[in-house]
Length: 338
Image 1 (cartoon, rainbow, N blue to C red):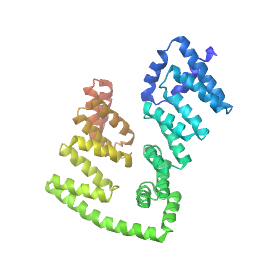
Image 2: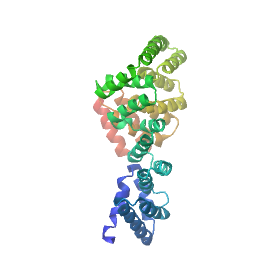
Image 3: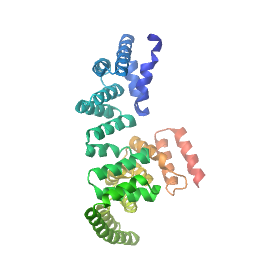
Image 4: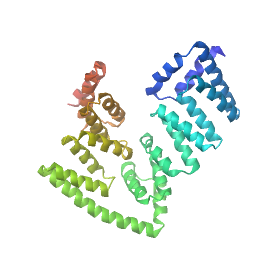
């Protein structure tokens, strides 16, 4: 068995996000050789018991691992998964949540918890988790539409269908949900009336905001953009303009908190990452600023007008932290956009 010393360690890494590998590496390697061997024996035993469907014994073996490394996120995840297979939802939730708290950026951990909430029919909790996964694929976005429908949030469902159709084109899946909503004439009528009323209010607020923005009255512009977003939370233009105004008026804390909330709804909107990162920089939270800007890099396209400022800010931050290699790489990108 000792010839396969690396295998449990590999399996641990398989489910752990890159940001937490060093933490797990430290926890594992600081154990004595005897403890590591015992950990591996327990881990193998747990995997073997799980493979043959002996879930109780598998859980017992994995708990043996936790006695040696109490806060191992992968082991907690495996225990949560086993409880889920046994329909012990409360214990599954407890262990899965603990694994996420230790490795908050782990996609697999979050998806498992999300699937557990779906299985037990707790759609409201499922929505909370799913919002952090929608940037991964269009399928997750469609699932969010479906959950809004199932929880009776028809306005949110229809609003999101409109956004997704505009961005990705027609979808038979979303169209079926729209038809199901509109098969109830009263719902459709009520939704249409709300939409028409909201659109009238939105146009008025947005026009007023833009008027005051052009005239230089930033406080009034902020006031009307806030009203506009209250009436239409999915008005991307107003969200971007308001977040930018918070920066211009040096409301850095408000800018950070506002964009952090909005990223739950618009996880691919690069302007929000930029404002969030800039606000953190102004608040002297350099490491956090770098982290959020790095998270947004996947959504930066060089043809975007914001790309130049985005790369420039990130290069500046890496220079502050003496990461010259990263800084120079980003400066090259900046120069290529001039």
